[in-house]
Length: 394
Image 1 (cartoon, one colour):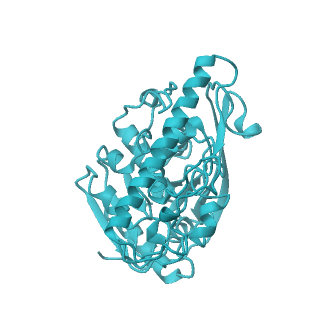
Image 2: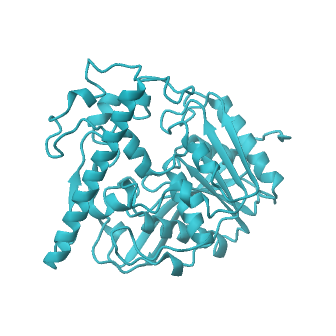
């Protein structure tokens, strides 16, 4: 790969506000941003000063805002126009419906084409934005979804989703639902009392120490799967009961305790790479396991089915990849402390595109913290890949 010499550009940041009408049975977002019948979206567009470009690189996460991540700004400083798009659920995924976020992403891409005038759009799926972007692109290329996993009508086949022209998957997992199943604490015996636990499955019990043998791992993974299945069955039963009542209560929130207990956090021999052991991207795994920001800690019934149930979500990145035909670049970070090591390859192996490439960024952590040289090398690699395919031209 012939990497061009990088030039650091000054970057201007533009606040972006989009809105569109959408009928809804009830509000899922607090305040004016969730105004009944109108969806409001906010984002940040980074534009390298005095650089005219026909391509927009779009980063979007279902629930986070990405403008403070290092990669979008690094790409902008290297001369790429970048949009960090926020969904209607920015910073709160409790009631998040992935189908809604797909349509939010579609609104940004349509705006980029029709209002800003970009000829080409490239999706950059980072972290949890990977499965979202894969879901979007699969539905833009071959739309099939007409209902949410809860059975509510939401027709993406009629949403007019515009396919992106290329796809970059970086430091991204297969799906929020798959990650939850691989991280959830199987020792919990009573969902309403997280202190009731099976000590033989408690990863943080002093008698359970790495390395973990094959028998323990098989039992642990089976128990994780069983807990998710039980939780999902309760969700479906509760939603069905609310529908049977046919009253004004149509949704319910709940807490799922202890969801950050992946043996890979503590045992480097399991699917080894360069990740730090005894640590995860949320800090100490045991603290994160019971903390307020663990995966799926707060959820509604519909959000659980759309985001967190592997058997129900439509946002399974590896399956979505089978519908994607545009040029595809996959970037795995070898020291990633947030994305399980096999996940990038799982998606890459199922991409339909004939123009596909995968690179492993050696030593890179999830956020490139304290790694400016690796960040720049990755930005240069990405820019070269884009330019080779005719993107990011004046």
